[in-house]
Amino acid sequence: TLSIVNATDSEQHFDLNVSGVRLSGSATRWTMTGKDRGAANRVGQPPQVALTESSLGATSKTLTAAPISVSVFRFPVAP
Image (cartoon, rainbow, N blue to C red):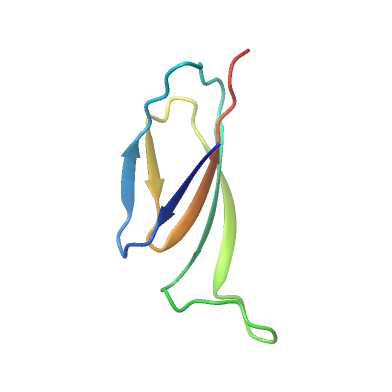
């Protein structure tokens, strides 16, 4: 499991380099973000911050973090 906090206004890219274990299969990414830094979910109002889940291909060597976001990545590890 790896998490990335991107507090900038631009998308960030990171090279994935893991040693000591062998990753296997597709990774899962959960991302929480809103349209700007002031985004918040308030009672009685439409949500401004959303959580999304996506799958990453097994061959993905670059991770991407959306602007103003928190992302959590889960990588399956070979036995």
